[in-house]
Length: 145
Image (tube, rainbow, N blue to C red; front, side):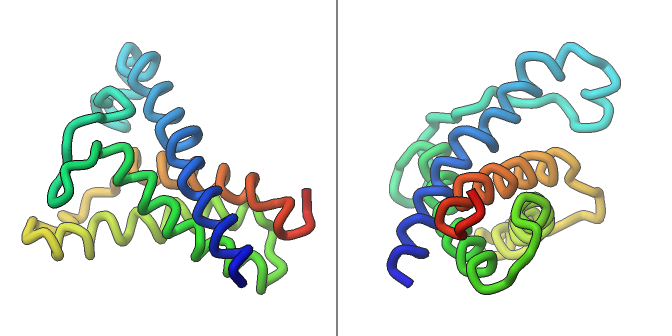
């Protein structure tokens, strides 16, 4: 169990820095120049946001990576117990679960407006990339790599 927690956290943390922020980098550097991409995903901000976040003042990207690590523990636990197609499940889990929490629970806890009914396509893409990447890194733990 301890191995699942540690490897899950590390995989989730790294997946934010590589896959989530890598997708943001691609959209920022290439997608912002394509009108149809901008009309679908919106104009993308620069990745690797180093602005301080409340309450601890750590950079946004480090906060995101920390929470990616927490979600990585959840993903590792699910994949270890259930024999699911890991990469597909990781992508779907990341896209749906993380995005749902990001548009409902997180704003609620911060006293902000929650989901307005618009589909957050960019969030689904970023979080799906995170889930796919985390599942890829978890393959050795699951005996699939």
